Figure 1 (cartoon, rainbow, N blue to C red):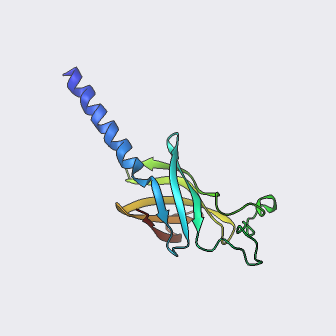
Figure 2 (cartoon, rainbow, N blue to C red):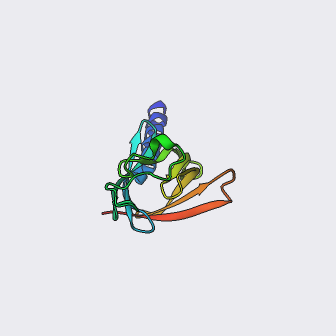
Figure 3 (cartoon, helix red, strand yellow):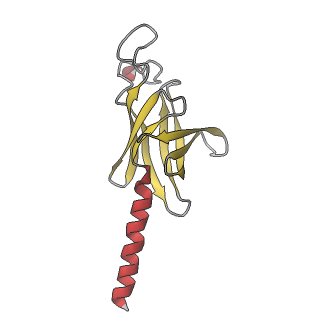
Length: 144
């Protein structure tokens, strides 16, 4: 009986981790102008911009820089390589990743974030300030 209980706990734990890791991989944002690599560090998930369709800034600078960042010291960093998703955690009860943040290089602002898979290749994300009901959502598509 004890072995059966341990086996059931192991199976449940493995399936939870497998579900949580389904977010891993490369995603194309909704405007289809950036690719984001989602990776895991510890038990949290992060996303880094790895490609831009237009990697030239408005003044012709290449690579495109993070000129809208609220922190002046970060405005000279290239957008490719920036972690735009930070600290997402798998919430098994809600079947989503939450308690994270998303950085928007277009506005230079950071928002609270939750994300949910609509299917194996479609990721729904919602950035918000304060309440999740009020915010902006977007959908990313998995790059195969």
